[in-house]
Every structure is written in C-alpha cells, then in structure tokens.
Amino acid sequence: MAAFIKSVTIFGSPFPFVSFITCPTRNWSLRSFPALISAMICLAILVVMALLAKEIIAYCFDPLTAQTSGVPTNLIHDLLMILLALVIVIGARIAGSVLVVSLLVLPGATALLVSHRLDRVIATSIGVALVGAVVGVVLSRQWQFIPTGPAIVLALFVQFIVATLVNRTARTAGAVS
Image (cartoon, rainbow, N blue to C red):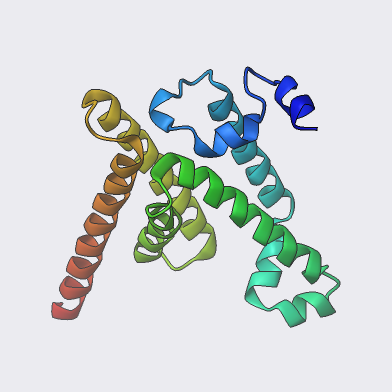
C-alpha cells in the first residue's frame, strides 16, 4: 500500500493537500497550486455565504426562531463550522497559526467601531480585510525581510487603532457639544 501511495503523484507531490497545509507562503506565486487552491476555497466560501445569507443571519440571531421558521439549523450550524475550519486553514497558511485569530477578529472589530448596522458592518469588514491584505502584501514585497502574514496583521491592527481613535474622538466631541 505504501509503495502505491508513493507512486501516485499529483502536481509533483504524492500528497498535494499535505504540502498545501505545510508549505511556506514565501515560495508561493500567484500561479502556484496552493495559491490557486486558496483562492478557489475563498471563492467557494463567498458563494455559499451569499447563497445562504438569509438563513445564516436568521440562525445567528436566533436559532430557535430560525428553526421554527423552517431554516435547517443543524445544516446551517454544520456548514458554518466547516466554513470556519476552511478559513482557519487558509489563514494559518497565510499568517501562521497564532496570527490567524487576528485575521478573524480585527476586520469585524474594526467594522463594529465604524457602524452598528449589519449591512454596513459586513461591507466595512470586507473592505478592512481587503485593504489589510493588499497593504500587507505590498509591505512584504517592498521589504523582503517582513513576512506576509504578520504584515497583513499589522495593517489590520493599524486600521483598528485608527478606527478606535476616530471613534473616541467622535464620542468625545459629541459629549462636549
């Protein structure tokens, strides 16, 4: 059996998904296999979230009412856990296992400082994440000694600090007036 597994190779590796989980991102190019798989998984997550947005929101706000309304809550719960696991795997490859929490928390926390309406929070969170990713990749490419993952987290953190300062300034100015 082991000889058979060693003889089967896909994309030059006997276990392409193992290399996807363990290979360093510094060697990735935009055309590499792990980068393409990551992009496809991200696109699939976005499509699933868009198609089931109403059911997911209903489940997240009140699972019992959602179940009473006919939403398959067990399926939605399992789907959310699978999507979260995929996001964590991709995030761990980009930023490392410790910094993946920052990738999950900072965009949403920054968006909640800007607005409290769900549609604006989601849009702002996506925008913050995209800006953080682009700035982090640019920083990493500009200065080769800065790893990509920590650069992305640094950009997200700077956005969070700026949003916090603006939020506090606005509250202070509103309280003084």
